[in-house]
Length: 443
Length: 197
Image 1 (cartoon, rainbow over the protein chains, first blue to last red):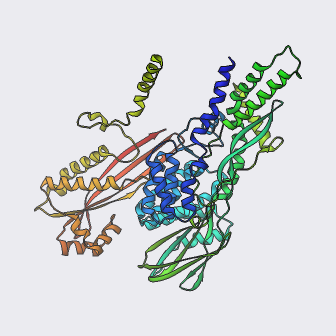
Image 2 (cartoon, rainbow over the protein chains, first blue to last red):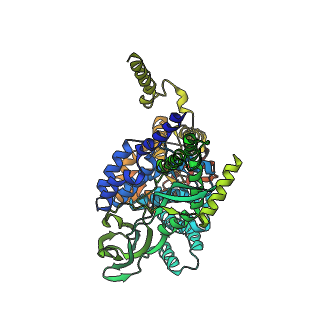
Image 3 (tube, chains in turn yellow, cyan):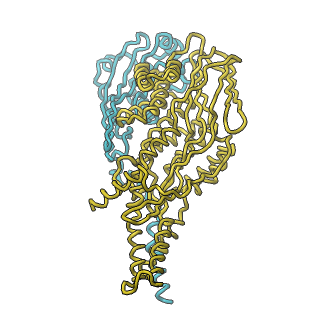
């Protein structure tokens, strides 16, 4: 009997160690990407993708981002279309706790399931990729796909900035594809969401303004900085008069990006790109919303193991002897160590779309037909300021799409998970315990 | 030792099915594989339905019945105004139309790759897929002797709930007289595809 209990206990850490956390598996290609070699990162990702497996869907998203950063939008676009077709989603704010627990704390690798937020960004990236590749008809298709998603999702308030970017890019794509009515609808939707924000409204005006006679236009999109990512963290919570240690996917911010940008066209200062989507801010808000449900699902997933640790302790105890007897003290210690071992043995799924930027900044400039010189100064970053220059030759009415990704020049830093914390007494823990009790009472 | 060997053999046999990989089937051997709709995009069966409808209506039309001679015709472009990436399917539809027109013997079909070699004309036709402008029409008539054009557009009404995504397609295929820019024949084909999750 005791051996039967010990066996799963011993196997759990071994099983957990088989796959290794996502942040460790991702390190080789992330190193290449953040050290300025997105082409190498793309090659590593392609090999991993060719090998198949449960990470396939998230690897496809990462590969698309690496290709975009490497200036290969025509290769990125079909990957994003494929991702859009295949990607499964999991709504962390509404899915049943059992579903969340089964996915987030599974010992066997599960097929990746994106958040709703990531799902929407697939369309945004596909739109951008098709526009940058000059495939306006396909970009318009993505614009319409995004529209279906936006209209269906009945967006919560905090997702609305995301849709300003998506609606704006959709407007540009539809305009370019010769669908002015649909484009006007998209810009109107973007404008309603950006109401009261003069900076965003001015960019939307610039995006919608048709090129004048003898002029072309440049659409500049800057993917700035690095989005926060998930990492393994351990928290302590008092549950039923006992302290439980559970792992959960914490959200870890990453340094990087440039706070200020200056844009120059043929030597004259032009309006700078404006943030249309704050990925980092929205991710943090979303994670704060999801935290109670994540903690509750962690407790739910840990329940059988906590019972096993209790059974281990009970099996070792001798109730005929006093609590302070050596045997019972050792039994308590065994139960405690079993619980500790189990906490380590139940890692959370920390996979996420890591190559997302911290924010998207956008600007559109009208340029005279012919050759123009565009200069972007990236200032107030962690490192040296950077200057990026382009010489663009445009015909009348032509739109050039310039996409800048700052992250590849910002250096690689391993993700540092937060230290172990006792969340007992916090609002999130209180809500998590309520959800956990509700879920276990239903059983 | 024997038991151990036996157990290892059983384990290996049990693992074999997992190593066999995907299976492939030829439609000539199993025609049923053509039937199921695998996505909300347009598949060959949808295109065949559209093509058959167009050809049947064209054959029965007053325009085809009153053709005095064998006019020249060029197949241009079907504009994709949908929420699905079906440009490849639409290119195949155009090639199928070309094939049927050649086989019908009613028209002299001009190879549209000849037209696309003229970069200016190709750009004009790409931009004017839904309605050819007079300057392009004149160029087509004067320089290439083309009397009729085939083009079209496909639009959709896509709708989505948590579990269902439905796409209703409206495919319009038309023949236009290059000289007058008049539409001499038009067919509408409606196709609906649905994805249930």
